[in-house]
Amino acid sequence: MDNLIGEFFGTMVLLVFGCGVCACNTLAKSKGQGGGWICITAGWGFAVTLGVFTATTLGAPQGDLNPAVTLGKCLLGIYTVPQFLATSVVQILGGICGAAIVWLAYLPHWRETEDQGAKLGIFCTAPAIRHYSLNFLCEVIASFFLMFVIWMIFSAKVGSIPAGMGPYIVGILIWAIGMSLGGPTGYAINPARDLGPRLAHFILPIAGKGKSDWAYAWVPVFAPLVGVGIAYIVVAALGVFL
Image (cartoon, rainbow, N blue to C red):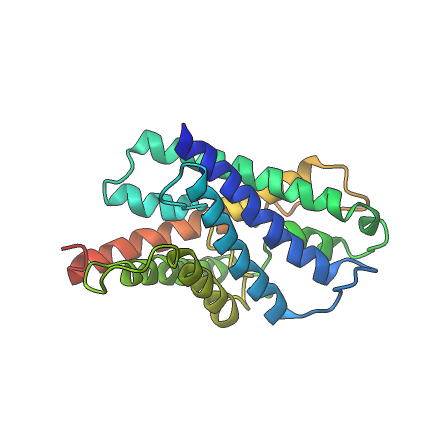
């Protein structure tokens, strides 16, 4: 139960700061409007670091915040399949909650913002060029390198990392993925990060919100799972788990 509580609140914190930096940079009359891509990618990196610290403190020592990462650990035998499913559900619920908090924090700005796509982009990802198979490929690649590099960082061959440093290193990795591979699809690399806030967008009475783009929603849900599965196969073949 502590693991589920930690994953819920950790993912909530992830989305408060992640969706929050998007809202700050996007919504009309926000003091941070127009901050740019580097600001957004840095914000998401910081969001992951803060979310992992929260999850760990509240009883989730793995601090996944991401069903795809949880799947990777399930493949390693750290989680059972029922634990993977339960953890994924609470991560998605945490994503809904975090996105709803951002909606409340920026409540007067939604009506001031006319662009429906921009408002949706605060909650979830969308491709710069819509081509579902290639969008899927991009998310697979980004998610592969998320899990592959996490396993490289924390492998026994690297050696122990000083206590408390892990979340900072993972935050830097997220920042790097955003700057390098985020351009085509917005680098969801996390089903809970995309589906939870997308559900919040669908549910909440956001002024002038438009549609939630469910035609694309399957890409950021399934592509990260595929990318992590491929990462597991490659890392196992390289013998890193030994």
